Length: 116
Image (cartoon, rainbow, N blue to C red; front, top):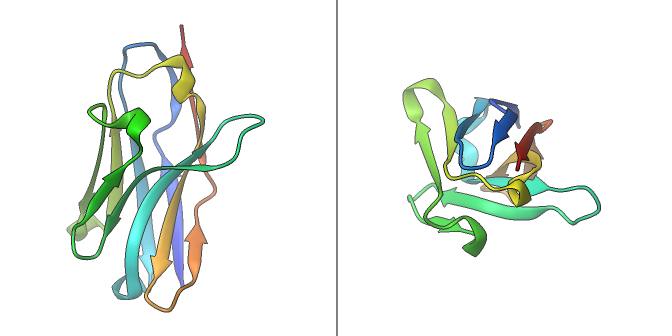
């Protein structure tokens, strides 16, 4: 299993930037893919960005060109750089690890609030 701890959320004005971090520990070599998800009040959790162990990256259409998923293997940390933030990006952001054996692990989430 793995443990995921997100950080970096906060309050930012529209047009601003934030970088979220997801610190990963545990069985990191059994991770098949990692992703960032978000859930706004009253809405379903949705995929924001994901990256597979082979480096394949996928973004939600709503964040393409504004958000970038990346990682630092030496620090066992994955990042989500968020630029040109909009009020509709306000949500709790979660990090998820999908293991090679099909189990998902989630972090506790970090709140991102974008004011207009």
